[in-house]
Length: 84
Image 1: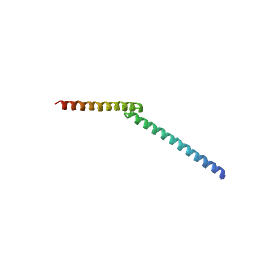
Image 2 (image 1 turned 120 degrees about the vertical axis):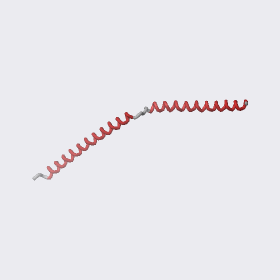
Image 3 (image 1 turned 180 degrees about the vertical axis):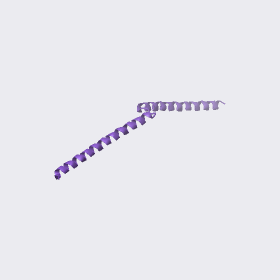
Image 4 (image 1 turned 30 degrees about the vertical axis):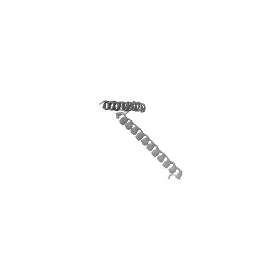
């Protein structure tokens, strides 16, 4: 018959082995999920934050120019109407 200390040691070793296996499984799942997410993200048509901000600035300048041109067009139309 085993001593209680031997039984406790055996239980402790088995529990430790289970936790180690669980840790390895968790690490494997985490790595697989990371790889899957990276693969899916690489398929997306995305741009960097810097490129997005650059395009946003270009768009803002374009909008400003468009507003100025619209105002100039209104002024020209008003002048044309006044001259009739």
